[in-house]
Length: 315
Image (tube, rainbow, N blue to C red; front, side, top):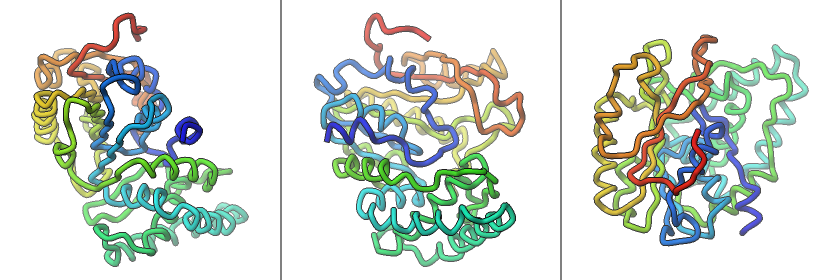
């Protein structure tokens, strides 16, 4: 189990993924994580799971619970956990069919898989595991590796609508990592649901990392279409209220979000929303804005209901 914790890493590209900020998060993980009283880890917006894999690498075995409202994403995690060898076989077939094609052929192949994924969506029962999940997971991972910018974006009907990415040498299958992730997920519960679904699992032994769809800095940077549901300011307020519920239960809570002060130094939306919590601003580079200016250095927020360990290196 130790080797799997060390080798497993995120297996999906994910817009807003946290790999670049892992150092900042790790310096702010709560005291006692992995070697003290904290024995449970919960992530209500798992996305690509970069923080989950970081926690798993550094901690002794503990209970982990991953949630996301994106039922397609949870389907993929579940298949990696339960049927990884068949998933690898189906990805290998897609890879061997796709890579020899020229640019035009690859585009046609991509849109064929995307169309099939969308047409068969009504046939999938996301509440009941079945063999059909494995083929769908392979299609989703293929699209994730070959679509534009590795985005996961759907319209209001739930149709995946990201265009072809035109990569020269996309790595569609990483069998070793998928197997390592599968072994790690054997000790992890994966569920679809709203972020509030995790509340019954939370107690004073719990660390909860919360990475919601970021509040857009402006209209041109708006990107919250990870699922058919949209995440607006009322949801951000509801989330902050939920974080106070977790705080009263004694859990250690860490939240990340965009910093509105990047655009408007007088915007105190999150400072007021999380008054009484520790709010820190750390440098990051956004990667989902199509404008070059939107990819420059910006601050992001790390908000906690505790003080991180004394002497931690500051950003």
